[in-house]
Image (cartoon, rainbow, N blue to C red; front, side):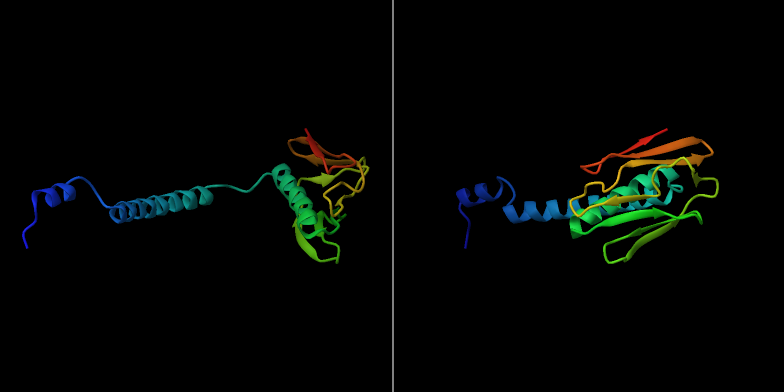
Length: 151
């Protein structure tokens, strides 16, 4: 069956919706593979996380855990140079060792950071850490779970 001039003209106007979706899917797959490879390389190039940044992440993690699981959480700093995060059922969430040259000062008014199931701080005070770069103060404000880091 021969095509009319009108049918030939319609075919030459552009691509179908399915063809455009197929091209878009291929472009997204190629972009995704490239992005994943670049992100993987970037993660491999990072060194260890500095103590202050790790401590911030850990405090945020237990506060988020308290709100998400609606349970009391805390990080306790022990004399052995380690700190332990626990949930309400005394489940250990994580345990970390302080860097060798970092220690909690005797001037600290707290030895733990506690959060209620609403994410509010349960006790207020200051943690003083001695580091090779200087002193770091972690100030826990009562209510609303605000924690401030001061160098």
